[in-house]
Length: 309
Image (tube, rainbow, N blue to C red; front, side, top):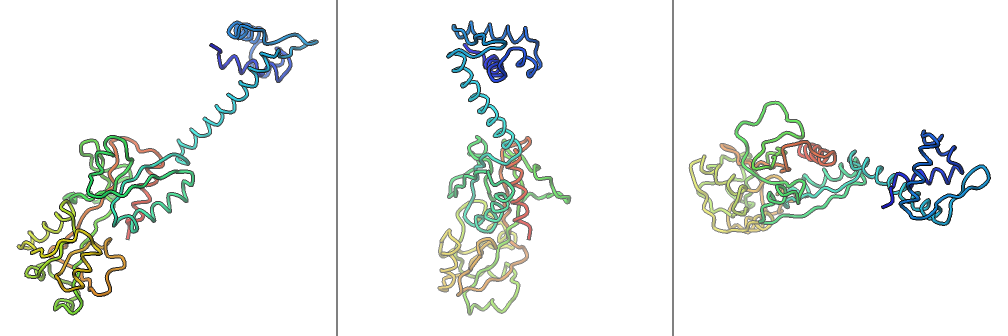
């Protein structure tokens, strides 16, 4: 088997024209270079150099190996550059899983910033439906997933570092945003005259469901339970736009998070709710614990900035 290092020594001998000159350029002794060439000729099974005046010139086999040595040298240099770019976060690939309402409001501005900072970075985006994206993060098939989970009861007073977060079963949850719910009422409803509603104001109303069963619906049910009632869902939509259409038609009232109200239906009225104010917590789920690659840290930083009001 040919030794790649000896092939580079051969290349130095051929390009410089002599063993002595190659030794001087490489910082070797002439005898060391001669030994390297003798060993390489044994590996090749053919003569690689022949005398030419005071120097040497390559045989046909020597020219062939020199060309390959040059190509290998270029590939190694390219690999080192690519590795340096990857290490610095200038290139690479980040796999992101997200749900619909954070796409335009949170993820889009974060990705625009990330592209400016890391133009060579590839981002693989996939919208998650009812499937849980956490197994993909846990198994390394996704780098980050935007998810909703119960808000931690004791959030730290000091802001966390971008790599910090609560770790559960090999997944670290980095808090991004508390997404509060708003009441959505049909125009002409008796409650639209109030600027802020008590949650109990909606206790006797027919409700239009806007959430799939899971942490988002749990946030609504928990708040209503704390207010002392259980909502009477007369229509289930599991989609914010459709829920607003049902509300506009007068079928009931609904709760929709702020991130789901961009360009809300023209025939509905939106009001704040309090005592308690329903809220869902949005997190970036990443595999952890441990240091994040530079590109992933850049994405988490951009997501945090996009989540800042």
